[in-house]
Image (cartoon, rainbow, N blue to C red; front, side):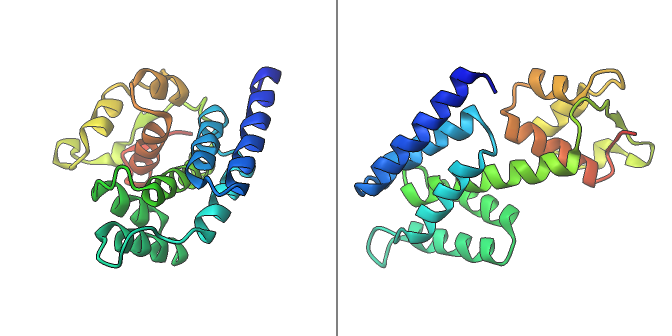
Amino acid sequence: MMQANEDRVATLLQHGLEFYGTGDVARAFLLWNEVLELDPGNEEAIDYMRDADRRSKPRGDSGDGAVSIVEDARRLVHSESEEAALELLTSMGLRGSLEADAMVELLRARLFRHYQSEVGDLDRIPRVAREGGDLQSRNLPPSAGFLLSMVDGVTPLSDLMCVSGLDRFEALRSVHRMREAGILEWD
Protein backbone atom coordinates (compact mmCIF):
# COMPACT_ATOMS: atom_id res chain seq x y z
CA MET A 1 0.00 0.00 0.00
CA MET A 2 1.34 3.46 -0.87
CA GLN A 3 2.32 5.84 1.93
CA ALA A 4 -0.59 8.20 1.14
CA ASN A 5 -3.06 5.31 1.49
CA GLU A 6 -1.40 4.13 4.71
CA ASP A 7 -1.71 7.65 6.17
CA ARG A 8 -5.36 7.86 5.06
CA VAL A 9 -6.11 4.45 6.62
CA ALA A 10 -4.46 5.47 9.91
CA THR A 11 -6.45 8.73 9.97
CA LEU A 12 -9.74 6.96 9.23
CA LEU A 13 -9.08 4.36 11.93
CA GLN A 14 -8.34 7.08 14.48
CA HIS A 15 -11.35 9.20 13.58
CA GLY A 16 -13.54 6.10 13.73
CA LEU A 17 -12.32 5.44 17.26
CA GLU A 18 -13.05 9.04 18.21
CA PHE A 19 -16.62 8.78 16.87
CA TYR A 20 -17.09 5.44 18.60
CA GLY A 21 -15.80 6.91 21.86
CA THR A 22 -18.38 9.71 21.70
CA GLY A 23 -21.19 7.24 21.02
CA ASP A 24 -21.56 7.94 17.29
CA VAL A 25 -21.30 4.27 16.28
CA ALA A 26 -22.83 4.85 12.83
CA ARG A 27 -20.12 7.31 11.81
CA ALA A 28 -17.43 5.05 13.25
CA PHE A 29 -18.68 2.14 11.13
CA LEU A 30 -18.75 4.34 8.03
CA LEU A 31 -15.12 5.33 8.54
CA TRP A 32 -14.00 1.79 9.27
CA ASN A 33 -15.87 0.62 6.18
CA GLU A 34 -13.96 3.23 4.18
CA VAL A 35 -10.75 1.69 5.56
CA LEU A 36 -11.87 -1.70 4.24
CA GLU A 37 -12.51 -0.19 0.82
CA LEU A 38 -8.94 1.17 0.77
CA ASP A 39 -7.39 -1.90 2.40
CA PRO A 40 -9.68 -4.97 2.17
CA GLY A 41 -9.10 -7.27 5.11
CA ASN A 42 -7.53 -4.59 7.33
CA GLU A 43 -7.33 -6.44 10.66
CA GLU A 44 -7.58 -3.32 12.80
CA ALA A 45 -10.79 -2.09 11.13
CA ILE A 46 -12.30 -5.57 11.29
CA ASP A 47 -11.47 -5.85 14.99
CA TYR A 48 -12.99 -2.45 15.73
CA MET A 49 -16.14 -3.31 13.80
CA ARG A 50 -16.39 -6.71 15.48
CA ASP A 51 -15.97 -5.16 18.94
CA ALA A 52 -18.44 -2.36 18.26
CA ASP A 53 -20.97 -4.82 16.82
CA ARG A 54 -20.61 -7.10 19.82
CA ARG A 55 -21.11 -4.25 22.29
CA SER A 56 -23.95 -2.46 20.52
CA LYS A 57 -27.50 -3.31 21.42
CA PRO A 58 -30.12 -3.69 18.68
CA ARG A 59 -32.18 -0.55 18.25
CA GLY A 60 -35.94 -0.50 17.89
CA ASP A 61 -38.79 -2.10 19.74
CA SER A 62 -39.29 -5.81 20.24
CA GLY A 63 -41.68 -5.92 17.28
CA ASP A 64 -38.96 -4.86 14.85
CA GLY A 65 -38.37 -7.69 12.34
CA ALA A 66 -34.93 -6.34 11.46
CA VAL A 67 -33.75 -6.86 15.02
CA SER A 68 -34.71 -10.55 15.04
CA ILE A 69 -33.08 -11.10 11.64
CA VAL A 70 -29.85 -9.49 12.86
CA GLU A 71 -30.01 -11.67 15.98
CA ASP A 72 -30.52 -14.76 13.79
CA ALA A 73 -27.50 -13.71 11.73
CA ARG A 74 -25.44 -13.28 14.92
CA ARG A 75 -26.37 -16.81 16.00
CA LEU A 76 -25.26 -18.11 12.59
CA VAL A 77 -21.93 -16.28 12.93
CA HIS A 78 -21.37 -17.77 16.39
CA SER A 79 -22.02 -21.23 14.96
CA GLU A 80 -19.41 -20.46 12.27
CA SER A 81 -21.95 -20.20 9.45
CA GLU A 82 -20.79 -16.84 8.11
CA GLU A 83 -21.93 -17.62 4.56
CA ALA A 84 -25.44 -18.37 5.80
CA ALA A 85 -25.47 -15.21 7.93
CA LEU A 86 -24.48 -13.09 4.93
CA GLU A 87 -27.13 -14.75 2.76
CA LEU A 88 -29.78 -14.12 5.42
CA LEU A 89 -28.92 -10.44 5.80
CA THR A 90 -28.60 -9.69 2.08
CA SER A 91 -31.71 -11.63 1.08
CA MET A 92 -33.91 -9.81 3.59
CA GLY A 93 -33.20 -6.34 2.18
CA LEU A 94 -32.57 -4.61 5.48
CA ARG A 95 -30.98 -1.52 3.91
CA GLY A 96 -30.78 1.39 6.31
CA SER A 97 -30.54 -0.77 9.42
CA LEU A 98 -27.23 0.20 11.00
CA GLU A 99 -26.72 -3.18 12.65
CA ALA A 100 -27.55 -5.13 9.50
CA ASP A 101 -25.36 -2.94 7.27
CA ALA A 102 -22.44 -3.13 9.69
CA MET A 103 -22.77 -6.89 10.02
CA VAL A 104 -22.91 -7.32 6.22
CA GLU A 105 -19.68 -5.34 5.84
CA LEU A 106 -18.00 -7.28 8.63
CA LEU A 107 -19.03 -10.59 7.09
CA ARG A 108 -17.87 -9.51 3.64
CA ALA A 109 -14.45 -8.59 5.05
CA ARG A 110 -14.12 -11.91 6.91
CA LEU A 111 -15.28 -13.97 3.96
CA PHE A 112 -13.05 -12.03 1.55
CA ARG A 113 -10.01 -13.09 3.58
CA HIS A 114 -11.27 -16.68 3.70
CA TYR A 115 -11.91 -16.83 -0.06
CA GLN A 116 -8.54 -15.25 -0.79
CA SER A 117 -6.71 -17.83 1.34
CA GLU A 118 -8.66 -20.68 -0.28
CA VAL A 119 -8.18 -19.47 -3.85
CA GLY A 120 -4.54 -18.52 -3.30
CA ASP A 121 -2.46 -16.67 -5.86
CA LEU A 122 -4.66 -14.57 -8.14
CA ASP A 123 -2.02 -14.72 -10.88
CA ARG A 124 -3.08 -18.32 -11.52
CA ILE A 125 -4.75 -19.06 -14.81
CA PRO A 126 -8.09 -20.82 -14.42
CA ARG A 127 -9.66 -23.21 -16.88
CA VAL A 128 -12.99 -24.94 -17.05
CA ALA A 129 -12.62 -28.32 -15.36
CA ARG A 130 -12.97 -31.40 -17.53
CA GLU A 131 -15.09 -33.00 -14.82
CA GLY A 132 -17.24 -29.85 -14.66
CA GLY A 133 -20.02 -31.72 -16.41
CA ASP A 134 -22.77 -30.06 -18.35
CA LEU A 135 -22.42 -26.39 -17.41
CA GLN A 136 -25.84 -25.55 -18.83
CA SER A 137 -27.45 -27.81 -16.24
CA ARG A 138 -25.75 -25.87 -13.42
CA ASN A 139 -27.85 -23.18 -11.82
CA LEU A 140 -25.20 -20.43 -11.85
CA PRO A 141 -26.10 -16.87 -10.94
CA PRO A 142 -25.80 -14.52 -13.94
CA SER A 143 -22.68 -12.84 -12.51
CA ALA A 144 -20.90 -16.20 -12.08
CA GLY A 145 -21.97 -17.31 -15.55
CA PHE A 146 -20.61 -14.12 -17.04
CA LEU A 147 -17.31 -14.54 -15.20
CA LEU A 148 -17.13 -18.16 -16.33
CA SER A 149 -17.74 -17.12 -19.94
CA MET A 150 -14.50 -15.11 -19.84
CA VAL A 151 -12.36 -18.07 -18.72
CA ASP A 152 -10.12 -18.78 -21.70
CA GLY A 153 -7.18 -20.69 -20.19
CA VAL A 154 -4.86 -17.72 -20.81
CA THR A 155 -6.11 -14.85 -18.64
CA PRO A 156 -5.12 -14.78 -14.93
CA LEU A 157 -7.79 -14.72 -12.22
CA SER A 158 -6.86 -11.16 -11.20
CA ASP A 159 -7.52 -9.86 -14.72
CA LEU A 160 -10.79 -11.80 -15.04
CA MET A 161 -12.00 -10.35 -11.75
CA CYS A 162 -11.10 -6.81 -12.87
CA VAL A 163 -12.84 -6.95 -16.25
CA SER A 164 -15.91 -8.77 -14.94
CA GLY A 165 -17.46 -5.57 -13.63
CA LEU A 166 -18.23 -7.28 -10.31
CA ASP A 167 -16.95 -5.83 -7.07
CA ARG A 168 -13.88 -7.69 -5.81
CA PHE A 169 -15.81 -9.54 -3.12
CA GLU A 170 -18.49 -10.88 -5.48
CA ALA A 171 -15.93 -11.82 -8.13
CA LEU A 172 -13.74 -13.68 -5.64
CA ARG A 173 -16.79 -15.33 -4.10
CA SER A 174 -17.90 -16.58 -7.53
CA VAL A 175 -14.43 -17.93 -8.34
CA HIS A 176 -14.25 -19.66 -4.95
CA ARG A 177 -17.69 -21.24 -5.35
CA MET A 178 -17.04 -22.42 -8.91
CA ARG A 179 -13.76 -24.00 -7.80
CA GLU A 180 -15.50 -25.77 -4.91
CA ALA A 181 -18.20 -27.01 -7.29
CA GLY A 182 -15.57 -28.46 -9.60
CA ILE A 183 -16.32 -26.03 -12.42
CA LEU A 184 -12.97 -24.20 -12.34
CA GLU A 185 -9.51 -25.61 -11.80
CA TRP A 186 -5.89 -24.50 -12.05
CA ASP A 187 -2.49 -26.03 -11.40
